[in-house]
Image: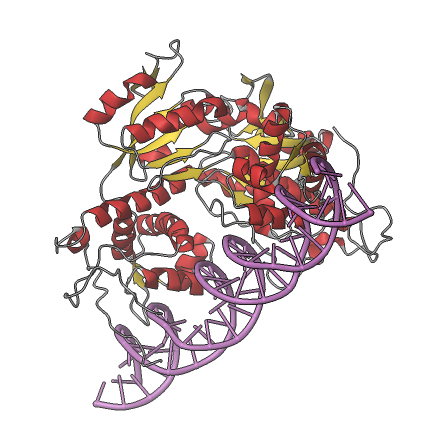
Amino acid sequence: MSQHRHPGAPGRAGAVPALPDLPEATVARLPEYLRALHNLAETGHETVSSEGLANAAGVNSAKLRKDLSHLGSYGTRGVGYDVGLLIDQIEFVLGLTQRRAVALVGVGNLGHALAGYDGFASRGFRIAALFDADPSRVGEEISGLTVRHVDELPRVAAEESISIGVIATPASAAQAVADQLVAVGVTSILNFAPCVLSVPEGVDVRKVDLAIELQILSFHEHRKASLTALPASGGSALTALPGGLAATDTQEAIGT
Amino acid sequence: MSQHRHPGAPGRAGAVPALPDLPEATVARLPEYLRALHNLAETGHETVSSEGLANAAGVNSAKLRKDLSHLGSYGTRGVGYDVGLLIDQIEFVLGLTQRRAVALVGVGNLGHALAGYDGFASRGFRIAALFDADPSRVGEEISGLTVRHVDELPRVAAEESISIGVIATPASAAQAVADQLVAVGVTSILNFAPCVLSVPEGVDVRKVDLAIELQILSFHEHRKASLTALPASGGSALTALPGGLAATDTQEAIGT
DNA sequence: AGGCGCTTGTGAAGGGGTGCACAAATCGCG
DNA sequence: CGCGATTTGTGCACCCCTTCACAAGCGCCT
């Protein structure tokens, strides 16, 4: 692999640039490894082999080794990886050494659930503020936080250092909210509204659309149904799956 | 809902299987196109160019054309695509001509929100039943549905034809629920629990992990921050990493 | 009728990701 | 102290996907 570094490191040999630029696919898997590692740590494991960790994370072991090699992590040949060390490394690379503040806009059905979701807190995030445009919702208390009007966003952003904005509004309001978030300096947005957001360069948007996931499953369901209605010998789609590796091939690549 | 319009069905006798097998990446984008098309239809558009639709869906126009060509859809050169026709074609391919029944297991924080999410109903799905293992939750009414105990799943599955199972339980319960779903014949599962599910071949699992999305954003946020604070500052946070990311290995082979 | 502008559909090139297979490295044990 | 068992790190080949660029097709206008 050509280890081309950024063009701006002339003199210094050995001076390591800020972060290795990881393949996007690797980045998407690191959180999964991290979760598996925490499980292992809690059950008392001190080291783990690539095979074991890959298994726990639901991926191929070669892929896992390549992923970890990208971030320069050293395992020990013949032994495996040090669980604690690996956790620290991945958390550092993912920028989780600081607890990031999240602003959640839209406390409807979904927003309520997100505000109360303890999976955020347990994995390095802190919901710092809740917003809604509906005056009748402002003032409501959810999970110890008071809902504020979205117009207060600038003031709150000045106090707290908002790292990520989460949009859980109806689609019709999402773009306006995104604009407001960008205006107060938020450069990472997680969008639950079913619509395309346009944002300036340098702002990252990830989208989660619950209905889309169902529609993708629906496609496979439809395909499976149309296959069983096909050839003779009652083979059924289960035995007729193509290629060698039919198992769990959907369990990945969400997003991008 | 519309009729049965199989792409290329008339005239071609048996040579073509019921469904073209689309690239997975294409399948994942079709729902996005569908949503954009519905928006266009509501605003009175009868046709749309690949450029226009690609724009509305947030993708490259060449990619969109290739995607649509995969499902045999005809646009008209010089004009574009017929919006209504394209909607029918995509809905057929995705298996949305029937309204699919969804069983939701786990009515905690997230499950509540999913049960009330109207984005499902508006896009071809019907939540047919709610389940939970907690007896204190059984009997509760949510969005017009009564929560039943998860042990009733077999009986309900016998009445309703469950197409997709959604798991919104804690991670500790997810595998058991998945097993139960598989046992009653569900072959598509959407998993919100942060864990890896193992299922038999032929069962599709898609996973949505809200915290993972935040962690991916956190990575990019971290990277952006480390880039702006770049050149002369030798230290950076790198040295804070236990074990160090000493990627100083110049182990490049002699190649070329 | 014929030409012109617009748009689709696709061949081909390039990039990225995946998985295999193996050499290199490390540990434990005799 | 050296050997074998074990496991990492990675070169390589393959495959999928993306993107460009362009010929072919269609409607409209003259």
